[in-house]
Structure formats: C-alpha cells, structure tokens
Length: 138
Figure 1 (cartoon, rainbow, N blue to C red):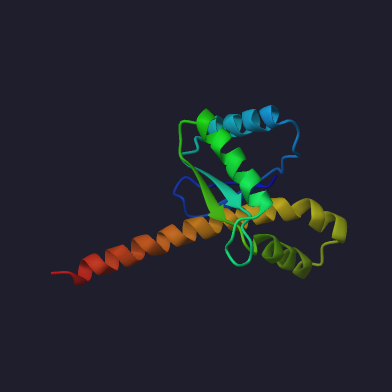
Figure 2: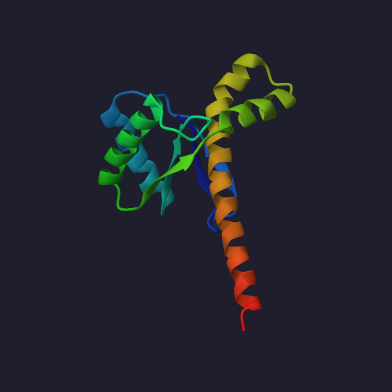
C-alpha cells in the first residue's frame, strides 16, 4: 500500500515507505500509528473505481476497509478517486530511466503521493475560486 502525507500547510505531498499488506488487524493498527505519529487530520484512501466511474469488486473491498479504519480513528476518513494515478506514476517513473524492478517498488509510493497531491490541489483551487467570487460580490 502506498502512503503519503502532506506538509504542515497542506500544500505538498510526500511519499512514505510502502506498506506490504499483512493481516487486516495489523494493517489497521499501522495506519492508526501513522495517524498519531504524523498528527494527521484527515485520511484519504484511494478509491479504485472503474474508468467509467462505476463500482468494482476492488472498490467495494476498499470501501469496507475504509469503514473499518474510520471506526478506529478520531479523524475523517475519505475515499478519493484514484483513476489513472498508477498509470501516471508509471509514466513518471519510466521517464526517469529507472529499471523495471525499481519502478515496481516505487509505483505505490508515487501513486499515493499523486493521489494526495491531487486532493490538495483540488481544495486549493476551490479556496481560490471561492476567494475570487467573494471579491467580486458587493
């Protein structure tokens, strides 16, 4: 599982070491530890919906995992569309000339970073649009 956190201002995303899945209980505890360690205010989970936006068997599994995680945390847990993040991560990694095995190991971390950065950028753009609209209003 790829993991990433944002800087304190919520501007940039940085990848964390990838987590190899183990038992569900251990995975959930690992996330809880990361939330405490990094002072996380919100957890995003990549939502693997289909390219047309529909549910898949994997998206249902992820949703169930997200619900279990949310019951253990004191902060919001949100699903965020992860369509094309893996493809973009692989494209970026290929452009570096990195070997296939290194790309495979880095793929999930880069995907998680791209996912979080898309969330941060989306909300920064929303705040900017809102501020501009407020300036235009009498």
